[in-house]
Length: 146
Length: 146
Image 1: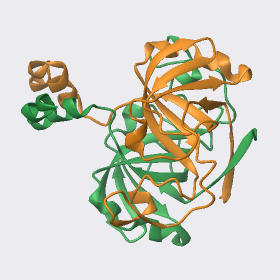
Image 2 (image 1 turned 135 degrees about the horizontal axis):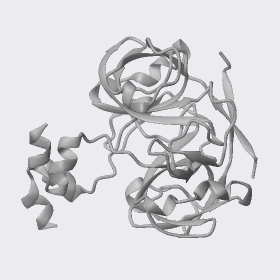
Image 3 (image 1 turned 30 degrees about the horizontal axis):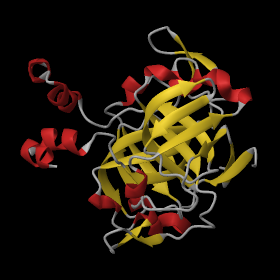
Image 4 (image 1 turned 60 degrees about the vertical axis):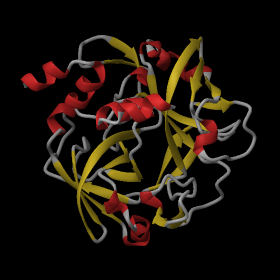
């Protein structure tokens, strides 16, 4: 079992946010993710997705702590929080894909500062059950039939 | 901008699945995530979460390809898919936390084989809007007031 693995950087974030803020502050913020040319072919048909999971590196975090104070002031373990000061150094945010222009993605709601290294992009899969999705989409009857 | 970053391994997966399968095959599968003792303090109050996002390393993937055939047979870019053969080598699954026993988490729905290195654990946050959550929970009126 290796103690560390090496992860490729596939692109970077550009936006107006120059220092870390709370997640709320980013909710409407538009960011551009530029995917490096050598990985751009991996974006084929990404525009078919409304939501994307973005994995990125908390490059300004400067180390980790196993306990953290969350927004409410309560203390929690780092794995029970979304603190940037985590052993992995990896952040994860689900964003809305607004537009793709070549190797650039315009996304809404990415809580990462300008210049953040991007590690991965995946189509987002909700943890809601089929039944819950059916309620949202007005297909309650379908879900009940199962 | 570094081309790679180093990510710590915080634990490993134990289950009955010895080789990669489709995600569907894992949906009811119970796995145990053992967090290494040096990171166990990071689990404080994790049992307050029903759903967790697990980041793990596709340690059997053996490299990446930028185009991939998805389950339906269609071709997509790797970032428009959840293929294990990705530049980052990182997998992400939302699981249900069934039980915590010390530094061991019993989780349901983790699509990772026995022995998979775990990179991070985060409380899961849905991409649904407050309004959609209100519809699910029957609080439609609340959402409409905003």
